[in-house]
Length: 80
Image 1 (cartoon, rainbow, N blue to C red):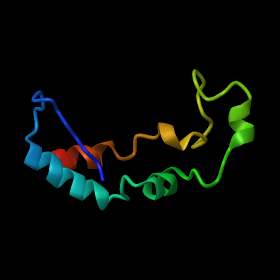
Image 2: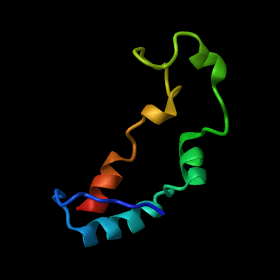
Image 3: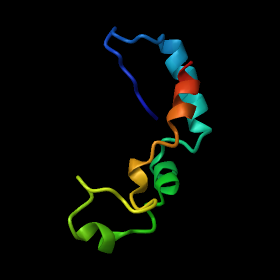
């Protein structure tokens, strides 16, 4: 489960956030399994990230899946 507390500063109502989380769950989920599957983390890329790390350099192709922003539009739509 996921707990979201905006501390009274949210620009989106709590009901809308709850509904959005349900829609986000259908995008692949926020469970550890869903995140691992979406990012392909079950296929480690140790060799490519061992040299120079992964911060401050451009990835060739889709080397660093955790830097993709492919769900931004879907997440924005879920909160609309």
